[in-house]
View 1 (cartoon, rainbow, N blue to C red):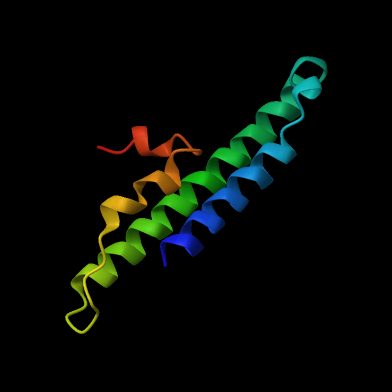
View 2 (cartoon, helix red, strand yellow):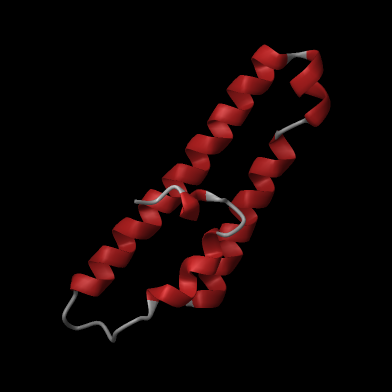
Length: 85
């Protein structure tokens, strides 16, 4: 399961990176702000869905325990792990 989460996380991060055009940040900053905001929203949504699924699995009595601490690395590329309380 860790491999699939890591693959999903990597793919989402790469898609967001591809959408952000560094040249547009300076040439068309208004457009860049919108694209960057959308990228941030995608990354935050991924994190929220992961956490929601994690809680559901942890609360499920019939599911074998899954060590989510190992999965924190899935969010290293998004930097969203630093924003969590």
